[in-house]
Length: 64
Image 1: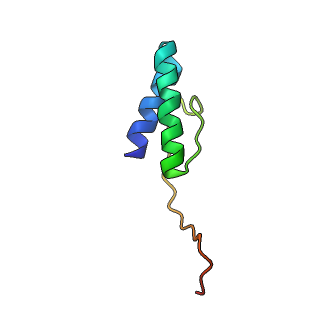
Image 2: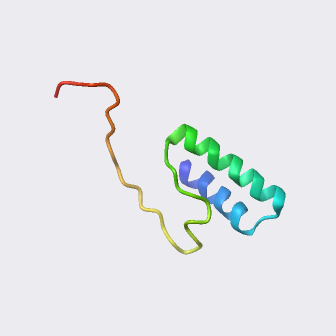
């Protein structure tokens, strides 16, 4: 779901009108707060791919 919304925000930011760019930035801020992935709008152009990298982040100190 993240990739769909990020691609939409990116296209709006790159090719959209002033209002669409503002909306794209708003979507990007919401995605950053929800998923914690900080990919700047305009960083990935058409045809380039974002490869998902699985990671494990432990926030609470744990004994393993």
